[in-house]
Image 1 (spheres, one colour):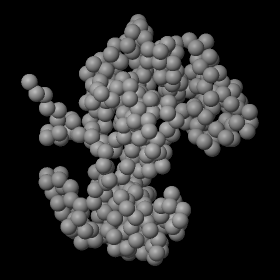
Image 2 (cartoon, one colour):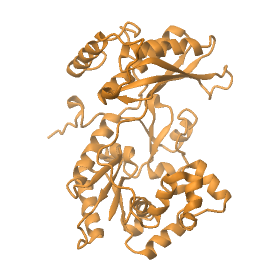
Image 3 (cartoon, helix red, strand yellow):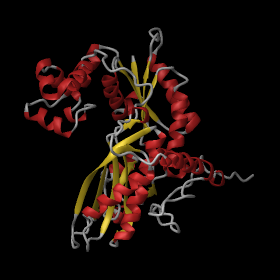
Image 4 (cartoon, one colour):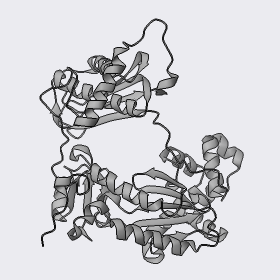
Length: 420
């Protein structure tokens, strides 16, 4: 049996752990630079506040309904996630951390266990030790565990946050209830296509011929069908594979017009990508640079553009990647536009030890020695102590986080003080 453990409204729950006055109050968490809503409590959902809602458009609704608004506190959320995952690893050695708030567990040799009671114990322990409420769904496969988890959360009053899908009858009933667009792994494009073929429920999907599914949705779709039928074909991924692309994108606190200011941002983003590349011991072969104006300011000139820059040799050097990112920016920059967002994505990633050599061009070998030194300094002294000349040496760019809560568990000077 597999189980999917999902933290309920995770970011909002993290805020409530250290501020109990927020219990049963509407809460929303905003994205980088306080741009849009990325997490909501159930109370905020009941007010009709959608995911992705621009904060400035819903500001009056927040005030009218006394919604508690927070900036993203990712250091806190990451630490709380680590605590939850550590607890889960005590209940089975087979665990796959699927996201910051989700994990798959596999239970081998647990046939004599009462999984519902075991799930209650897991849920109770996590709530007691961390304050984070979770929902748990048990089933024969990972895809069915996703369905079971959805039921445990949707009908929390009846299930108590635990649902064990341990019979064919339960599986069939669940698949007849689940909408095709809500099936794990079926995105908007496939959902629309399937609906056009009158496939509206997950149960309709599993009754399709295998050949048709493979032709329309490739072998990935066929695997999903087998999983929903109860045949386990997706095993746990105990260690996540290196990323195939790495991105650093940000919305600016205020619009940027001047090219030099925009160049500094793009250079900083490219250096951040380079550091991530070196951390996972990879090189990139191409860079995508993009810029965007503020689409919400209809009265101003709208412009968005991107460009792919192919490197002459694979690299993870901040110097090389920043150089080509700036060259790309020069080609797409348009004078007179007020830019609200920019980003850098490094692509074509390959492991350091499998880099294809170029017969005619190669990177200065001193770069690697310099990068190791920079990484060592950053690890010991903290980020932004040493910068490239293309960065603003006097300015430390920070995200707009006007509603940031304390980093209760990751900063010593921000821990809770108890007065006797």
